[in-house]
Image (cartoon, rainbow, N blue to C red; front, side):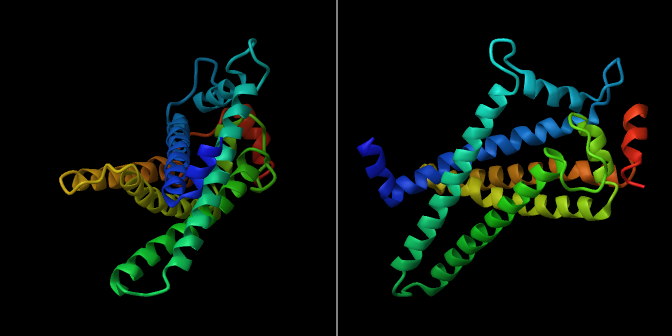
Length: 246
């Protein structure tokens, strides 16, 4: 444990922690996007949206070996720990780097690095606030206007994104996420010592393709719902939820 703490005290150790926790969070974001795409796969034979079935699966996976939502909460705890470590370590590194720059001996390089770091801090903070809002809207149902029905993911998404404000907000935030991920993926290659003049072009293309793919995958959901290109929820839930948006 002492060796681990000693490694964390070093700048290299902190960068490794940022890279690993960032990779965990990136994996979650990627998986979340893929899961969201189930809104486009329609319903099962009984008329239940596939995304609702998927959401139920996440809560019941492992039963009866483990209790209801047990593995889901394990995943949530891992993500929370990774998020806290990621944010805290980034802040510590930013403060350390700022205090170390007592002399501006390379103004252009310093300015570029400072702007990038500043953007990552700002975008990361905004994304953190958005995560809280997102959970409040689609997990706990405490914001959003339309009547929230737990487990009815498709219907909740459908009626929330009929409002231009929520659709626009999610699209804007996803653009910020894409930019954050672009720099984060590129920084990951650097931190792990994989960057090389012969490979950097490929790594930058991977970072760009990754960020664009995430943006399209996430933004397609509010865009298509808002434009009315997605079918209504099943009739029973449509009638039940409509009262909440009138």
